[in-house]
Length: 174
Image (cartoon, rainbow, N blue to C red):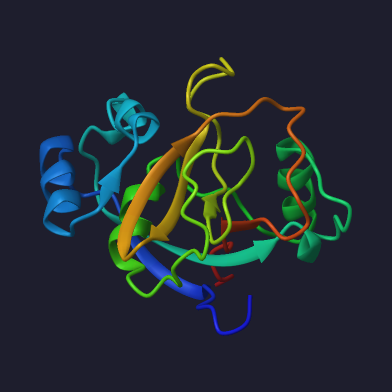
């Protein structure tokens, strides 16, 4: 999409807030949640832990060399071959709070069985193996409102070449 803001080598602090503090912070940033995000935010991974920096970058499925689309396992494997890492499971809310200049979606459809136009999926391990449980988070701006949304899919779901993911960059070598 021309003119959209792209994440490239951005440092984000992950963690450091208790679950109630995190929920208050999301609310104070006027970040909207869907029911899947609310479910994920109840996971123990959001119990307070020390804050730590993570460097993130964005890639489309096609940029990972998957020009015909791919499943999540294939996407994660291709990213790993390029030296990219999965984000921490709890990265979604922290990314949503700091990425305030995301380009708004032209499409306001909220659920369609595919990654939404303008959405940015956080590449992270699934919270649970159960495909009925939300798999992870994606970020989206619709009608001027920032959303942190959870999503569900199975390992057979085909993501399109244009779908966008946030990955963790490996720490610099010393």
